[in-house]
Image 1: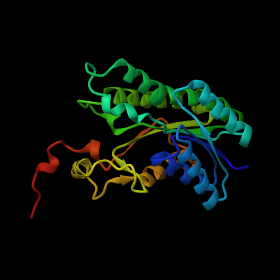
Image 2 (image 1 turned 90 degrees about the horizontal axis):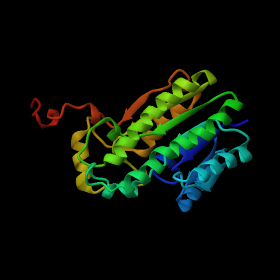
Image 3 (image 1 turned 45 degrees about the vertical axis):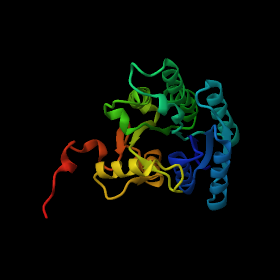
Image 4 (image 1 turned 180 degrees about the vertical axis):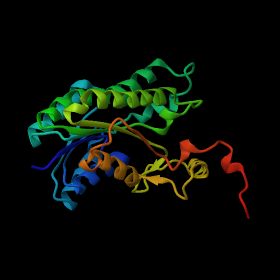
Length: 261
């Protein structure tokens, strides 16, 4: 029987690239996303190009009952859950996510509900199903901002940091049940399809700050997430792995120094 993977936020970007990667790796895919047009397009891509089946379910992960319905529907359709990718995030809050003094509490609340609690609820309901079939793998998608201080995005970065700790807790508590849990921390990642890219000035600034010749794209992140989700990573758990082109590893003044001619 094919394995089944649930991918929240699978309509676009890293979530979509990961869903497609897992389908190519032989898994059936259930996509939970508030963007049904994008989710259905991902399903079509999977069904048209792989031997895997796929299903899209409209899911606002900020609503616990919708996350439970996502899990229940996946089990009803495919009889098992082997992989959970918590990728959904509400990025609409970022323009008003400033510092702790200037950010409205409503921004904290919505960011908590979607970006952190959504992953908590997904794990809460998926883990018992994984235990029934002998184990599974969870990958939480965090952010490079969870590893750094910033003048802005206090809610986003703080709750992504909470996700990092959630990963460690799950890895330790459920490891003997053959359930692994890891986190990936992406930096600036561009979409494979050249849509929803940040402003050119922002891309130029990040390109100067990373240690690689190019910025990352969604498929780069999907390769890492897919590997961690697979049995090939069976002895890796509780890890936080950055995929940011070395952005969080640089000495701040390094790139301002002139190298040898």
